[in-house]
Length: 360
Picture 1 (cartoon, rainbow, N blue to C red):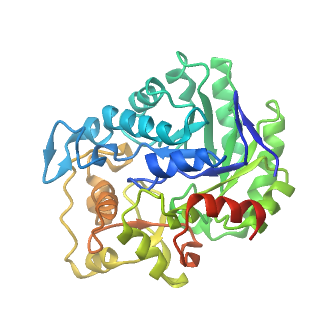
Picture 2: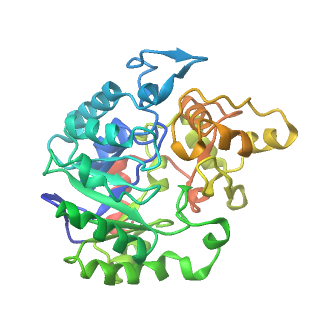
């Protein structure tokens, strides 16, 4: 596999570890992936939970109050600093969802903390360069689901005299939120194999932007397939949950180890798009009326309208993802990609990278 250049940074191995929150990819996982030659990605979601609320100024019902505490600046800096202790000066990224409240603030927080690369999905980040103009060395990577989306972003970024340093094209087999409606997720035309080539062609119109494939990629055969299609690299999330260094609770890892293919399904989300995860006690409790009461404490994403959409769907995504991080099997929400059921062991990141590169 050839190295991957993103802005001024070079990855020895063209594998990006997907950003996973709450607390699945923080300092230990991201730092180790970067150390081993890939790109470790810190999730900026729910940083207020880091080290048992050490960096939070206000709690209610053991939840960070307001987006300012849920997206703690001090916690994000501590996560980045601790990841740096592992990976040194190797490239390190942060995933910051466009749909979050305080997006611009969190982007600036990450830049101030010394992040090298920012990845953004969950919406079209048409003004992303506005918030990094004081940090020209920070590379910017949007996540798209179509060539049309990339074209819109590039046209809007022209006013900043900027093009993406790379683009991730994500198909509908990824874990967590999708860039498609429920019905669109099931259409063959939206498979990763079918949406990658048009994005590659569109990328050529803007200076040959490196294209990175994501969503359902599992092993070296998958990686080789997309590299042969013309991609410069791949992004993988779920596979990294099955590592020793993954920041997730052991209970979360066990949920995936125990899951079967039929357990992994698309589900409704307060964000407005379907999300993929493991069907567990949470979904069953929603059906029988015993699910936790929805109360918007952290005000995490603006599409939820301060809890209105959460009440309509039946769960608060911030509370339920954080419960998964805390290891609460009864009330946690456990996101995974479509291949999550294939996890059957916990190995080190070093061992996993070796498998992905050499196919062993």
